[in-house]
Image (tube, rainbow, N blue to C red; front, side):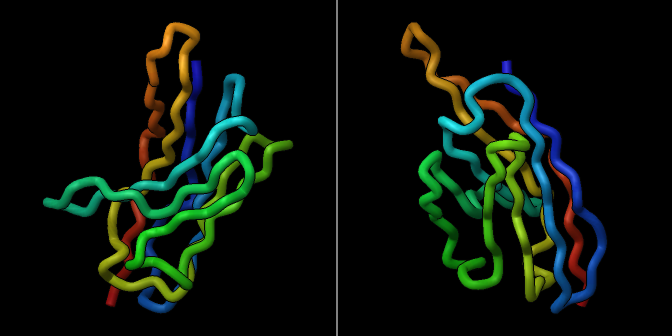
Length: 120
């Protein structure tokens, strides 16, 4: 069983910065990719950034160069540093990971989400 707890959201002016954290409990953190998703009102949830177990990073074009994902395997924590924030970045941000069970099923785990609001 994996639990994910996000923190660090809030209200910030355009051009400002925030750092989100996601603390994971349970086993397998260092062996699995970690993702940050976001969901704005009336829109579908979208992948923001992913960091693999080997540290490889993928990110959405809309945040490239402004957001940086990182992980600390010793603390079972993944971070999302968000700079040069825009009003379009306003959304609930979710931490996500998956586990492959012994019987072949893939289980998705999500955090409760943290609200990021960027004012113009």
